[in-house]
Length: 464
Ligand code: GLC
Image (cartoon, rainbow, N blue to C red; front, side, top):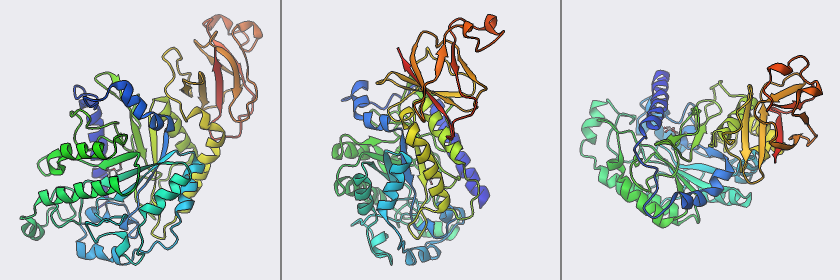
């Protein structure tokens, strides 16, 4: 079962990589009605935001061993039913979640309205397999949207194209009952068209009943003989409806419409850091990497491979240094809480963001002219004309920035706005005896010996 999960994740990473490579010649996702500049304007809040919260919540929080548990362990509907019957997140407090996201420095969130298991967190009129019919008895989506909006966050829906509960959803390689002869026999008359109708109805419902939805994460297509692709979702019709209902919405790239104008807005490398700004046909495109704290999206009680706060902060900086967004996932428990490990990470990131957010929000990759110094990551604020040097290994006394001389008007540490003195010549004696070897365009920053007490120290350079 674990092997299954591993293969699966590997498959997704591989297909993401492949997608990134094969995407050449597939267009840039722009519709006939929209120019690059217009898309940039539509997506401006999102590319400025840089940091969002993903929330994976559903019945799988009860088994607490991966959101794919139903598929990985080949659990029947009858055996999975207990999680529905006992679903009662009595401690769910959306204001707390919203505050946690805001304090971490996140500017938007994306919540699973339905994951692959088919369970709906919203009060859909097209099914009874939803939160309002569980012992909890209440809609989870509306209060969450209200709380998030009240904290000033933009809102996004995740919706699973896969559905392991719907009676008309046809068998495929990811289905929990794939390989079960008896099930296959009973399922042979399933009509995917009826499922498509259900899926389109629910997406329409989500995009009409909940006010403005800022982004939409449709998940996912897996073309192949036992897979599902655009035909199985009627993706082209679906994207048209989505754009009609919410013209400003920002949509991911998993509807299998990479080659269709207007078929997507951004690429989604998953649990994987692209080596550079994601491009198509050599042109940079908007991208967002979604990442977990510990490998699982749903709450996983016994998973121990949690990333440290510092790793997560570096992940955020690295993402922005390549012009991307980070959507960082929380898998709440079945009581409706963020567990202590998640809270500790979010608090830690928030602590760093309190002073560090200026190098993240509204920032992007540094202009070509600035080469990244060793052990550093650069980001750039084009409006404020400021360059941010994130120092991953604190050096002894000086930091030499080749090619930066003549370009910097003032420098300070970001965490306390204390001046960083610098010089553009060797005579200052900061590099005794080394002057001959240095290019004359080197900027020498004089740093305190003691590293500032933050997860990753940042130097803010005000450019001329
Ligand atoms: C994958 C997984 C899923 C997760 C998603 C997040 O497609 O199937 O469990 O929700 O990635 O991007």
